[in-house]
Image (cartoon, rainbow over all chains, first blue to last red; front, side, top):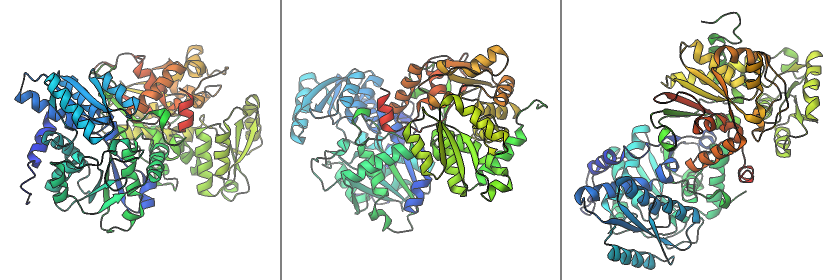
Length: 311
Length: 326
């Protein structure tokens, strides 16, 4: 299959990543809902990354990056990143797993439950303003001050390869997937999945979705507030992902989260609700009926029970 | 393997499974999550933990399996609607019962205690099932009166067909290629643990240990084991679904034969478990958490290096109920 020269990750990198991280992560299950299948007229499969270590898929990319870093540089001082929550938690856990120090730069409006979890893994918290510019600047400063290596949330080949392992598992579990819906923020999961899935099953369609057109969003989906595709992730998504984009509103996200809690008995965070909302949308209903088997990534389940958006 | 004193046979269970899976009630094979030990770092990691998620069953609990089998042989006067079906339940059994009547377009009456939450009463009524709300002390006697007057009554747990229907879970565990050393099951009236225990043991796994888990405040089976006969006693627990005021005659008999022991957990242990499962990403109601609570608090003996199956029996809890327990 022809890959753009900018795409420097192959399926083999993703398979290697899977071997490296498998002893430490969960090979997550998938779930189905016959109620939902009936409602949308397709077979929907939900990859439960909400059940992953640290409560989101980010554990995969973070761990692959840290293990690769340690392998190539055994004297690494530590790692640092900026994150609205899940990547920070994942990196803190990955660093602890690999025996490496960690600092995490966190926007000052991040849910407390996410910043508490980062502390729980023994990492240091550094707060910043909730802007893309200040996230990066603070991260750079900490990196210099402590001589820590930056592990970004998505724009890093080892991180992308780690996230791609989701597709390796998913296609093993459900070889006949026709399409995969992926919530997108920085694009790490979308690009990783796109590379793996297209290599394993070339005719598969990867659909990306986000709450509203790109920027720094005021949305309840705090995991995908930052809408800024990266230098590495953008060319991959441009090349491999369908040009259709699903946009879902906060209202739909809340309805979807409630459906998943009350009917599927799973706990998911708003960013995951975006995926479920997309599958329930009129947009999907109007798509090619030949897309029978739809995969949806439930990317995370880190929510504060006292702050769920319905009661 | 089986004898005259068996409440249900493997044959009964297999037949029940065929009946319930082909019924129009949409009973499902539920997910079995394997290799779950590492989700709970506090556990002995040499244990192989599997979780059977019956909370994901139609109507949100395992009860539909029992109800679906109870519905298999309805007398003609019930089928044609002249006589209504009667049961008693404040919770999940009532929901499964009402759902079933609605699907089969049959009239029915559910006796409920005054202590039942109003949303449960509303829910059961919403299926088109009649409801009579009585003081808890009158529930059993009213039910017995209906039975004596030849009404078609469904006992919510002390019933051969119900127990056999629940036993279908044992078949799924074994067919999922899980050869368990230990199976841990929540115990209220004992219908579920009876069916599962009979199914596992009569399938040839004679060394498999089955544990029933009850709340400390609703320990009817525990006391029945100690007394040597089914007991009636005052009960109280946050796990309302595990708190009928007596152990059944049939369920006691079946448990006596096939269940290793009855383990007790506190309300606090139950609620902490519910919270743990929420953080893992799974929704379970307090009554559904008892078995897992026993495992998490190291109350199941001899599990190192063993394959342990925990049954999560129900997930009918609203978000506001969950937060109110905090």
